[in-house]
Length: 236
Ligand code: AP5
Image (cartoon, rainbow, N blue to C red):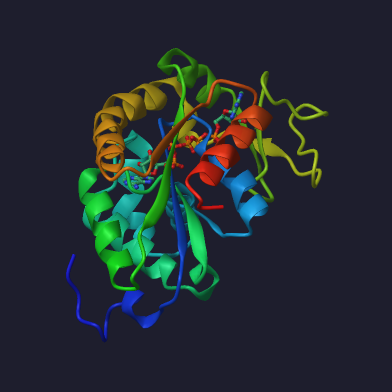
């Protein structure tokens, strides 16, 4: 991606940044873990999926660009995603680094991220792959429930249930199910999104910043393993 400096949001900021990339299949637990790492490391959690869902429920014209892809479980075109991430990374809360959840998802996105980071003399310091047995993913996604007040409050009907059915433990709001968590759309997401994800994993393995952890352990253990991996990468 090449843009002029004047119009380039990334070029307008600088300084040291800890860029941590979270990779995993749909439902692997990236969002759950990114939220925990963000709190632990005091870095913002940027989820491309959430940015798209916000656009879909507001007047943002981005919503029209991404709607058909998100609803059908396909990947949003690289150029659209890269532009959105470029603008988000230029916000000041990202000055010291970010946890990127769900980006990059293709090699073209990984290359574009490297190009963006190069402009402020930074690199992705760790790519954390949350690896889950594919057989678990359908149950994880169809059982997911989300707080209607704060979508960072995540539950699962059996694995991580709220204390009161259908109600968020933290703020008492109702829980809902994401539209793309229906069984049919989940199958389509897995079919379309797993092959490019494996290419991204190879990309970061070649760059020697890939760390894999088992994501089918209890969430607390996964977090501890991720923090150990980050410690090993001297990133934390
Ligand atoms: P996005 O929102 O990123 O969806 P996703 O990748 O499919 O990931 P999910 O949010 O579904 O799952 P997760 O891995 O975060 O798991 P979670 O922690 O919630 O993207 C949505 C759409 O946007 C995409 O389909 C695509 O169209 C588009 N898009 C986004 N980024 C894009 C990009 N870069 N390029 C192109 N298109 C893009 O956990 C799942 C469930 O499991 C929860 O119920 C949770 O409570 C439970 N759980 C989590 N951990 C555990 C555990 N250890 N044990 C038991 N249960 C657990």
